[in-house]
Length: 346
Ligand SMILES: C[S@@+](CC[C@H](N)C(=O)[O-])C[C@H]1O[C@@H](n2cnc3c(N)ncnc32)[C@H](O)[C@@H]1O
Image 1 (spheres, rainbow, N blue to C red):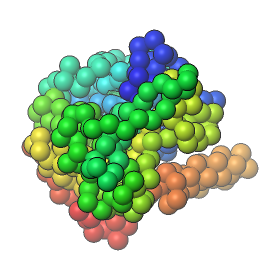
Image 2 (cartoon, rainbow, N blue to C red):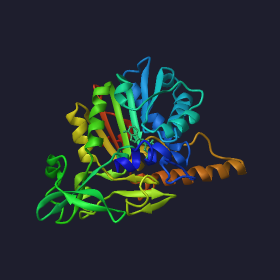
Image 3 (spheres, rainbow, N blue to C red):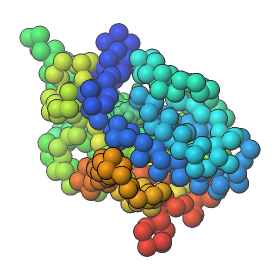
Image 4 (cartoon, rainbow, N blue to C red):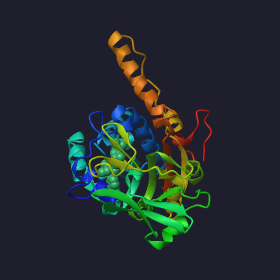
């Protein structure tokens, strides 16, 4: 998975990652500026919770085509010029190929780039990431009658095939929950967990916010031990990850229990978790400044509503998880986690 995604000469993200309607898969920022507008309100809230510092970092990790950061910054400037004034935008991105697209989306802005969040440090402010944790390589473990085994990849008669061997590193065998059935698969991503923990070292004070698909361990266990590694090419699901490695995206559902453990173990405090649907509603994604009056405005409004409905769809983007951690910053009172009734979910 690591080679298929990040090999410098052949990896998908290193060479050809293509996101958007014309590409391999859609992400929420492709549906227009609505996600960015709603998230900019969360960013302004974080800034306020941090005591309205004169200057603060706003970092997007894994920024794809750069459209989300562009939309967040534009909306912050429009709605909260007080917060926008001192913002220092930056991107953590490993793909040179995508950095070029980000640079053109954010043309004219003063942006810093780094491959590792620690190179930007110390970060004082906010780091957010949409669909990055699912892009970290996973180890696939299988429960067998001989104990835990790991799925390795080898070549047989010119084809890539799975081979089971003892897990490497050996400690991974302790990571398979008891409830995984015999023959069932369980994925772990020490790389994602290490990356999350590393954020605590990169950040002096502030918040991290992750948006992604996946669940906590009990939810993931209800899948009866089927693995979640899958590919996407030209908007089609590729169930066999060995199909044309490097030609398409590969992803695995995020284990938010493991992410939380890693974050808390590194010194973050848990500040809340909810669905994308609830978070975006709490941030007023449906609010409009004025009602459309002319036919063309009504048509635009229809397009806007349909995009927002897609972002809120409880069986699609709306089911994504939004998780926040704080470091030396208040965890209470974040509008992002306020339900529509006004109470705060923890
Ligand atoms: C699935 S894409 C999501 C892109 C974007 N956030 C969006 O919503 O459209 C994953 C992004 O994470 C980046 N990425 C993957 N691993 C990374 C890492 N270790 N550090 C920083 N960026 C990474 C990829 O290059 C890509 O930009």
